[in-house]
Amino acid sequence: MDFINQRNWLMIKILWISYGFAILTNLLFDPNVLWPPFGLAICLGATLLLYFVKHEYLMMYIMICSIFMYFYVLNVMHAELINYLFIFLGIILSSLYQRYEAVLFSGLLASLLLFYFFQRQFDLMIGNIVRYDYTYFLLFCLLIVVFFLYHVNMTKMLWKRAQQSELLAKQRLKSTELRLDSFINRTYEAVMILNQDGVILQVNPAFTALFGWEPEEIVSKHAADFDFHFQIQSTEMNRLDVTMRNKCGQQIHVNLSLTTINTGHEHESITLVLIQDLTEKMKTEDFLRRNEKLATAGKLAASIAHELRNPLTVVMGLIKITDEKTENFSKHKQLILTELDRMKMITSELLLIAKPKDIQMKAVQLFDVFHDVFQLYVHPLKEQGIVLTYEGPQEVPKVLGDEIQLKQLFMNIIRNSAEAMKNNKGVIHVQIDCDEEHVYMLIQDEGSGIPSSVFAKIGEPFVTTKENGTGLGLMIMFNIMKAHHGTIDIRNREPQGAEVQLTFPRSQKKNKQ
Image (cartoon, rainbow, N blue to C red):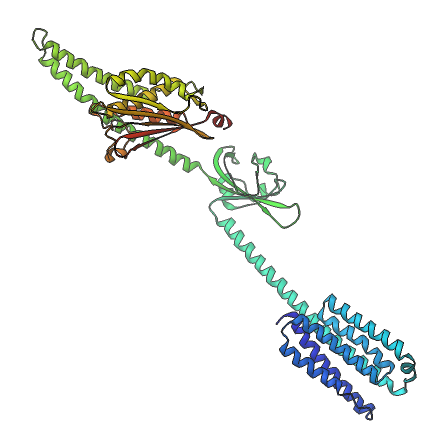
């Protein structure tokens, strides 16, 4: 039940008790004076309204008005001093609601009634004082006692509720503290709590195990005293990979998760630092990288051995059966030179992958670099029946790159596109475009496309669709784009052909980084 509604029912109880005391007083001390039935009507009417009127605040004002209406009728019928005194009882009763508006409203009504009666009935009020009026003063005193008994009971009840709420809040706080302490002390991650000035408030056993300091050695001291230097950038969680020193001075690679928590007090906050040891993780990652390198090296070695063994077998066989005096000498010699050239090409490309040349990065105009390659290939390709076209602006935002490697990249792509067109007919279309962050280059051909079985391994050494290819050219292309912080996307076209999209970051964006 709501607070105001409870007070409305309490007010009804007090009214009925007051009415009963009034009747009893009249019967004992003044039986000739009949208590007006209006008091009974007020009590019954207020009780019925309380059952039907659901608006508790409206009912509060009805109750206050009912009390003062009763006092008005009483003073009109019995213009005696004590009855005027009862008007103040309305103000006292309204304080049960513990609301300013109720007290102010009853005070206004009481003032208006007193002003009215003192103006209209002052002589009658003073002239009606008799000796037995002390009984009504006693009744007034008794009613005040009853009121304050209820008031004391209500105050005790509110105090008890406040104590219960405080106890419940303390229990919840204690439970939260226990759960938090349990989490901090049992988690495998090291935990350190700092105040807003960087003073260490608490550490957990995992922190002691990782860094070696006991809580009594480090708590209440500044984090900078232990060479712990980190900065909170915002109230959100910050993650940092840093190197910290333990008690023995050894460096430990850790990941910090820093969170600032407001304590609820003005200008007071704490920082929760979760520390994850990355030593074993870095060892594992290093071990996996070495194993991956070994596996890659083994795979590459097997591929190289396979690719070189075939031409070596041919060369060795031809040398065994070839004699300068034989009539097939010149033919065999040409085959030997062809196979040796193939081995030279494979070793050259392998050397380029294993030991790339130094990259001279600078802001370059992508169209200018491509234009040199365009001029180199446009006429030879035309003689083969292949048309090399370009679409796009000649002035585009510059990219950060190495001209020599970019030319090699464009030459490899155009050469692969031309070789994919087996009938030596078709168009190789080049397009350059850009947006606010990137410069794009799209090369499209009308060749046979790339088989789906090759897509999964594209970029790996010796994976190729060409009969005499090595696949190392594509690997070099991927390495060049990686060195230029770009991406390469290769896909098939409909109805036939393939396209290569190169994405370069603009030089301005790169410089900002």
